[in-house]
Image 1 (spheres, one colour):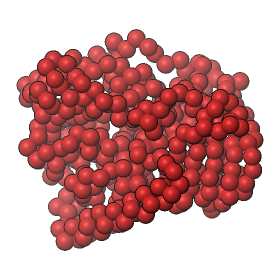
Image 2: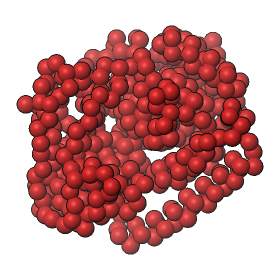
Image 3: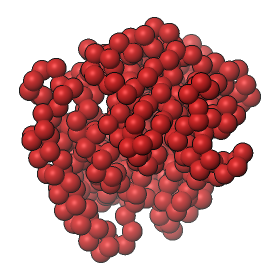
Length: 429
């Protein structure tokens, strides 16, 4: 997956927000201290170095991202704290292993961000007696997070070379209850069915029927479903031969390939990239999720009588430079056809202080990715500070010829203060 989401991060009334923030910080520190103490007292058997040089970075990830983002299950936090994510990324990405980002692992696949892995794991409500099926092994990180939480993990990877490499890695790291298979995840693993839980880390247009059949009665499935760049992460519970579904959050995963991709009827149009819900007028999902966008952190939709377009705008509050307050959306784009793009937004500021880096301020940014989902470029419209009323900020950028998709992001990016966004501009020229 490219990217991930944020849940339970909207601010309500200012007074309630302050109280909630204080309580959240206290809980966060208690959980982190508890987990950190456990790591120190119990050496990590999976750590081949004897002394783990990345423990502090995992603690920071839990403290600054996972807990503020709404992850509460102490077992999930403990598993993240003990799992060596740097072992599951390519060598040239080890320094970025504990940033909350998706990382390309080759074969057009990615390792999901720690937050989305944690969110899906928590939603799955793992129990020590569970038999879990994972669709989309990737580099093995999600399976590794599940391993100490359940009895057995059966995981399927469709890319043969990646599957062989990950199987060897998991064996070498001592994950004895993770069982790997190379094949089409659309078909599941009928020989090992039924499963208590199923987790799908790639996105089909619809839930594959074989997976429904292989889930136990009352069992849970966490799966992203939808169009290629407009997906919803669902928690589903099996009742009879049907699934009762609960929408969790918008998200963006790599597509489920094989039979699932062959049956996809709506295909993305990389020649005409466009943003969904660019003016934030669509009704909220679960009263706080912004439709069409994902990785929601530190922002909320509000009404503004002076809104440049419609009546709703997006409000960001930056109070901690360690928090990645932002909102993302993926779009298809073919750099061989689309040569230039106009990027921008209407932006209003209140007492904004810019961070060390210019882009660490209220801004609109775009990241370019090639066909293998490697990042090949980055542009932004930002560097704003102070206090001011609504103003349209936009610039024209060349599109890299190798670009096949892009991620548009808006947010504070480490700056302090308050910023409002409306009518995001993404216009091919």
